[in-house]
Length: 595
Image (tube, rainbow, N blue to C red; front, top):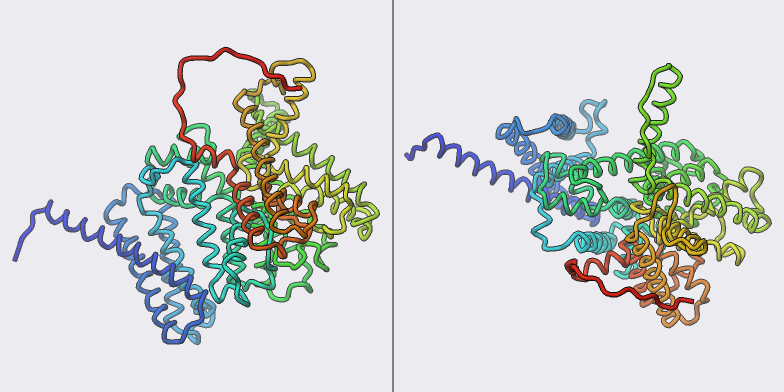
């Protein structure tokens, strides 16, 4: 019988532990595939029992692997991870306890007997095991822009395949329509070729919901933060890549930025879902689950500026068009989502400073003055957003007073006008009949859709800061100034160059889309086609009613325009053009004739 010294014993123990960890991860991945197949296909009772048996194996391996990690490296694990693991294991054991007792035993916990709770435990196990894997973006040989694009393409194609599962729809769906829906969801657009509520089952709608959430904040954001949360660190290369994606100012702030993004997203969505639930008419949606799902779906769709709705006519549906409280909540959610995460964080920081300053003032204490708590980026974004919303609301109110607003009274007219002016800036919900709008209103919507939301937000368009820089530029030229100055600050030339590149590329993409659809669907009205392309590029989701009747080639064109609008043409160019090194020379400068 062989004997081992202490080092040999430790080596083999570590090796055995690694094998167990790897087995736990692989079985959890397979478990997730079975989880999807479980919901996506109809199965015999025998197959279902096999699935359930495998689920229990996955859960058991997950619990053993988690406990073993503590035995191997207790001092390296954070308190927050310990709390998560303890809660997860207790919940999982409680679910298993209820399941094996049977439905008739212990009536007070019989609701946990449902197999769906076991599947929930599978998700928790997969999250834990996936987060323990070493994710190194350097090994992908892709730059941040390419990685960003590939992650979106991957989610889109996976989403399309999931939407084609038999139990995802009430009737068969073509791959093109599934791809269109998945692209629209991931790119948080909202254009649809089939009715979301009547065509997709609850399982299918849940897939769309997950695609919207993943597209809104980015799958890499979620995966990277979970990995960081459990492992407590990340490689230098990963931090550089994520820094480029999240816009973090300092390398050390990458994961704190990710944490803020996730915290803000889920907090606002949770609050919006609660408020939506409370605002609903009890007679419109029957069961508690229907109201809950409706609330969560629309909260996520609103904050992510997706514009998807389970109602056939969006919020214009009978019974919802006069629910002004619901409309106000939706507006608040998509405006916050459209402001951008850095802006929301900066606003929260400013409010804390402002409130603290007032408290100190009333208590007679002195507080040190902090200049520029609200930075230039936030000021320009807030001013531009406010001006566009106010002017848009007034024009919508005047143009549609005796038209689409005629059925509303008093405050209802104003809220509907506000909704109509705010939603084109990438939200995509509608509370009026879009086909009945006056021509002048449609022209205004073109401009609002093209401008879109703010940078680093869940929305699309050329962005408010781009529009603001362009406006400030021609005002500076008119006044004979060589620099763009605002709020006693000078706008950097690189920002000006980026702004005009974004404007030029957006018009190029939209124009190409209009030309192609005009060729493929020559019977369609040019105004309708242009509206569709502007809506697709700016990831708005509003339509004048031609989306479902487009030909296959036109649908593919809209898919491409939606994708380019979400990732931006500039990002695509950066991804595929090799960067040149800066050289220490300068050519003679000459001016060109412009006008």
